[in-house]
Amino acid sequence: MSSSSREIVTIQVGHYSNYIGTHLWNNFDVESSVDYYNTSFFNINENKRTPRLILFDRRGALKWLSNVVDPSSSQTHELDANTEYIDRSNGDNEKSDYLKDLDNIKEKKEKLEPTNFEQTIRSWPDFLHTKLTFNPRSLITLQDHWHNDSDNNNEQFDIYHAGIQAYKQQVNEIEETFHYLLEQCDCLQGFRCLCDTTDGFSGLYSSIQDYLYEECPKRPTFTYLNFKPKTDSKQNQTDLLNFCLTFANSVCTNEMPTIPLSLQYPFESNNKKVEFSSVKYDSTSFYQTSFLLSIAIQHSLISSSFTYDTLVDRLCPRKNYLLSLSSMLPFDFNSSSTLLAYLQDRDLFSDLTNLTPFINQEKIDNNPLACHCFIRGINQQHLYNRHTTQSTLQFNSASSLIDNYFHEQYPTTMITSSSSWEHKLLFQLPYPFKQLNNNSLLTMVKNDKNNSKSFIKTLMDYKKIYLNNYNKLSKRYEEYGFEYDQFEQMETDLKYLDDLYI
Image 1: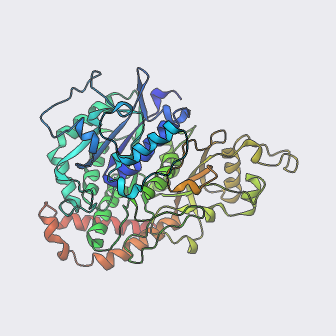
Image 2: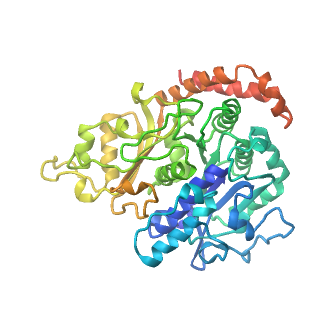
Image 3: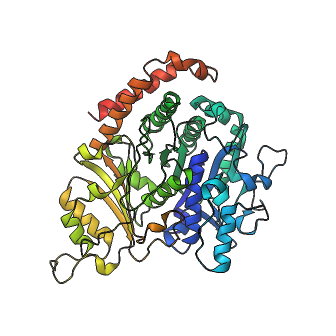
């Protein structure tokens, strides 16, 4: 397909989602030669690649970007072709120590360990080193809420309806920005949305999704609901209510494909985290966890054959809009000589790392309704042994081999897959992930009835623990206009999902 028929607009709502987004755009910059990126996510004009992006954060979180554009200031920007773009590659603003280290690496052409990045990275612009250009109107800050580097849990913006109120306060600016960005698309394919789901950004995103549903009713909105890392369980009640409201609005009200993500076990006090066989990381670090999620998100919906609306039709049969995301980084099958031998000897599902919470993978028999796979870094000669494989089986790509595997093992599953065996991951893995010596990758978006049943059951169990008495939470929420009818509607939606997957 031509680029004019594949535009995808990315929406980032919340501080942690912008961490994930920063890794995404850094990776895109390095991998600019990979065709399936250029055709979707960028507006290319006069040899400049401008992300089709709108992001939201609190004031003060933009760091050096705020010196270039402050949407709350009296200065306005014309929304036309003459709009000044932010060029990250030529910025004169003070760089963080992390970015200075990257410059030193380039200048000296030798590998240097960054300084203690946990101390030098205070916000996502501190490690934004892409050379892409940004439209200043794509960066929207909340007028009445400020970011605090030392505290990512802003008590003044910790509930769902604070985000709804923020949307109402800036509705003209937000809708004008969307109008401008959508006018740059010849044939909009859909939206890829990253959303913080446990604070006020959850309500802000629900308002944005409602607007998109009315403005572009036939365009799918793939939503990644991100649980930001936590070090304590003090706000479990409000966090859970915020998530439930956003989740129910996305899956039930707007009926959009929704993928919850977390590398921790939300609402548990034992600090348990998702384990990767080849990666060690700090589950409380915004920087480290967002990188691991960004790699999976970046590749999860790539398809050489299907547009977003087709993927929705295939991934969400019977109006089952709850999806899960898994990955394997690296995709290492050294114990098997070929990909075909690996699939014949192992259960692919059990080897994947599940990034969607509330699913007890060890106790579930996989029963996928549909799934979409993407594989990178598998050389063609490693697909199968041409001398021992039946002559009737001929595979030209990893995706065709995966298709055959699923059709044999899961004949009732709707399978789509893509592969890029000629491209390994091109970017240099950031500290502390240099322990990875294999840059192959497999991601899978899956619609599995048993996974969904486990997710909803666990969510309902947590709801009984933390949300059994609405009156204990009502005062703060009612300050922002929250009515009990909305709580009842959320209860009805979750009960519907519970019945759906029984």
